[in-house]
Image 1 (tube, rainbow, N blue to C red):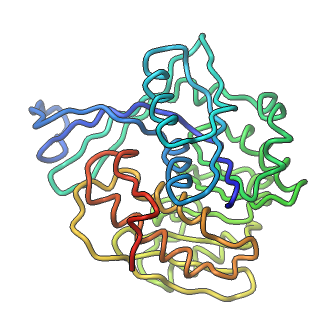
Image 2: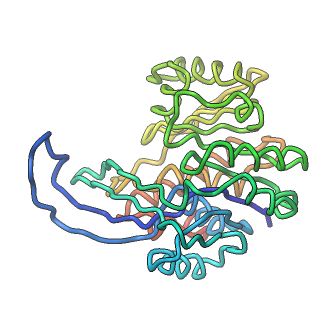
Image 3: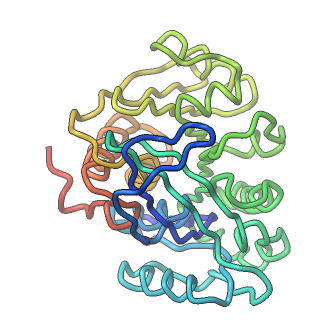
Amino acid sequence: MKKIVVLGSTNVDTILNIERLPLPGETMAMTDRSVAGGGKGANQAIAAVRAGAEASFISKVGGDHAADFMFETFKKDGLNMEHVIVDENVGTGKAYILLDENGQNSILVYGGANQAITPAEIDDTKDFIAEADCIIAQFEVPLETITEAFKIAKDNGVVTILNPAPAKKEIPAELIALSDVIAPNETEAEIITGVKVEDEASMQKAADALHEMGVGTVVITVGDKGSFYSFKDGKSGFVDAFKVKAVDTTAAGDTFIGYLSANLEKDMSNIEEAMKIASKASSITVQEQGAQNSIPHKSKINF
């Protein structure tokens, strides 16, 4: 069983169902409202454990009811919470998701405790990270904290996977160099590289730019089209998506990352197979509303 460590965010999601996105200055009624567990880090950790990995989570929450809600969610999945820190001085992260009738979403995020996790706190998990096969991080926690975690991982031969979301145009060169795999979607890839991702040729161009920054393996997800991979040595390929009717695309990318990490060999030799499994899992996620509740268990991944 693979040991996966996820460093990232914990949010409580409030999902607001609407017919369409409102225009500037417009007031409109919601058709429904619900609350669920979320945060890119938590989503990816839960996806990894449901994919069959031994998943552990490094995160920070507030001393509030939102944190209690999330702890109950984590317990149900058997997620290792040994390094989920409770900080009484900040609130647990929250996200507000505008979900339209076509299953597309826009998300507003309050970082809260997620933005308060420090490199010093990561140092306290040094031995814990060193025992993992892989560590994943996203951009909903401070970049200097991710950098510290990836330094520890690299010193101990642990594979590092960077999910640069939400996208930032400027990523520290040191962090890029510490990343074995970078996995943006097409929008994130464009923000980072300046290359508009429209077809396989532009995917390769964006990947080449990321290789030049120092990343050996690039995986770019392109929604319902599929996902593209590129190695620094020149090998590349495309894995088609599974065609389904999307109800809610929330957590689709997080499901992909979690499943990819749980199935990818350290030498990347099975990358197409791992991406196919991850794509299948994501296709199931989008068929149900919500984030963590929609992430499938391994038993549902049949071809």
